[in-house]
Image 1: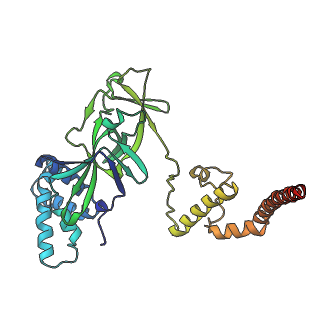
Image 2: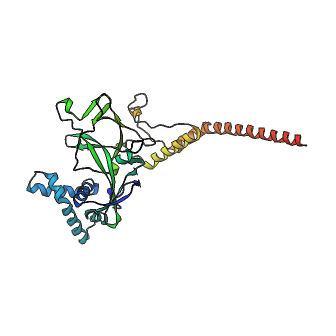
Length: 338
């Protein structure tokens, strides 16, 4: 195991750095969220949950939040002393609680997306503080909307770091039978949220790479406290679904994407990979197996058809005409001087 998922975040903080000391309760809450959402810790969470079920099935999540961090630290210490392979140094560092002294920031870039805190946004004409997290639970799903309050960097042993977003979550409860009491409304393709009501104040943390960015616009129809949520597709960022039935070389797909972008910059030929095309009967055939074609094959076929040669010839002829004009002007200037 080279590293843990929570220690491998692609985050670059850039403004408002402060060095603050949090109270132990807030640090324990942040540490529990990191443990609960770390993929490599899931087997130990399941093991600890089975032990709790032997006593009682009541309040499993609350009991596990209280007992698991200490249980996990002891477990990793014993496994490391016994020389077990599963007890890696990274897991041991994660099991030990983070330092109560943390760095906070007012802005950062996560996987190429810029986030600002709400406080920083209030002094700007742009908006980068809206966050959205899709939630999944037993029996359904729920979308959580809020604003970013602070970017926190937790420091574990051996200088391992985890970036968390501390957020304020708007109440989006849809369980009320009275439509007028619901804090979220859906009107055709528009979603509006009442920002005057909040919830989950004791669970403000998410991993920085879990956040998706949204924008909030005033809803003149429902009132000043209502905001229309606008989800966006970021430029130069695509969500390409993976093929389940075939093993596709990801390096090959990256090569195709890069070459296509370079082609677009060179000769204004655009290449598009659209998810919608899979649903278009005119662009999709079920009677043949799909085939992934490398970019160099496409480029070679296009060059053999004379596309690149014709383009280059046109460019060369234009350059020759320009140079010929320059030479004639130079000759006439010399004759005039003589």
